[in-house]
Amino acid sequence: MSACDPHDPHCITCGDVAVEMLVVEVNDSLAVCEAEGEAREVEVALLEDVRAGDRLLVHADVGLVKLA
Amino acid sequence: MKFVDEFRDGALGQKVAAQILGVVEPGRHYKVMEVCGGHTHSIYRYGVDDLLPENVELVHGPGCPVCVIPMGRVDDGIAIAREPGVIFTCFGDMLRVPGSNGTLLDAKAQGADVRMVYSPLDALRIAKAEPDREVVFFAIGFETTAPSTALTLMRARAERVTNFSCMCNHVTIVPPLRALLESPDLRLDGFIGPGHVSTVVGARPFEFIPADYGRPVVVAGFEPLDILQAIHMILVQLAERRCEVENQYTRVVPYDGNLRALAAMAEVFALRPHFEWRGLGFISQSALRLSDAYADLDAERRFAVPGVRVADPKACQCGEVLKGVIKPWECKVFGTACTPEHAIGTCMVSPEGACAAYYNYGRFARDRVVA
Image 1: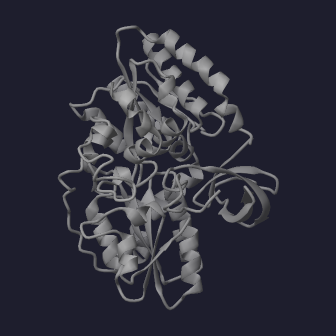
Image 2: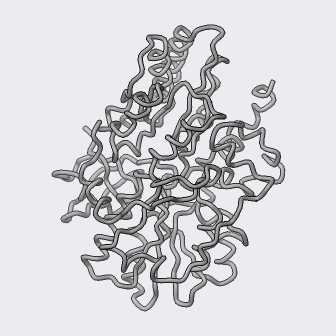
Image 3: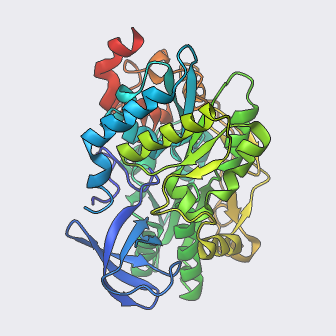
């Protein structure tokens, strides 16, 4: 997962694209999540009962869906 | 990766393509609009349209949040970016969108402190790290991105970060769809609904399309098989004379959306009475501003902005491309005066824009397509 880069062929934020990320650690409404070796701090306030090991669909550093 | 590899299986794609061929009526021409720019990008990237029969045409909709921002709003952003002491933050694509006198990247080259961020949360971090500067976040996007802005503003309020504000350009998906359906020069048979917008708003808001306009909608994911399956579901509805909202993307989209996200948006945002969309003109209640409760974090109240409406360049036919009236390559300046490196229109700026997606992935097949 690359950051939003004007030279990147695909901007995941502007493109309404959500990325699957693995929850590594949860601290209140923020969680450290990983995808493709990159860690990001992600807001998880929109989701119920997020735990390490969950897989989330993340857009612009916000977890929108907890994947089954 | 789970939910990705399975939906890029070429053999399965051929099977769905054969099913599509089996359901279309010979002699009938079908026009299906993919609403979301992410779908447009996937269609060109994976050559989804190459698998479709000739009488099934995909029309690219207005769902690229960068492409619909009018030049006047870019000018307003640049005016704020040039204010002394301001750090102006926005997503990468937005940096290259031309205003009437250059882009945000041009303003950066001329000395303005313009920084690319991945999320509004990144912008808030900058504000906390540089308390002596005014940090402004230029918010764009549909309902997928709006919750991120809302949560960040709620966090800024809770953490009493006073040097952070937001220039809000968030737009909503339903009003432009209604405007398109009212447009006399557009005939559409069905819609591929936006997958990730629907994770927030759900599939329910699209029920007006079958109810009021008699067109099927299938909310779809972004992998090539998702899109092919959604096209098949639309064509099956048409063949069976059915007309309803269906959800192809059930592995991700709850029919009622994310209620917490909707509540956060309702607290932080209010509907603008009207907003200008590039190519579509002014559309009532189609965009968000900060609510009165968050007015102190509104960059448009904190800074003076010109607020001048700027007409699109005459050569640019983004409006007709956004409405699906013409194909990208039918624009007079496509691939010549207007390229991703030197974009005239916004559809060529963002990779999700129909022109850029076609330029990057589809232009080599242009002769075949035109023929």
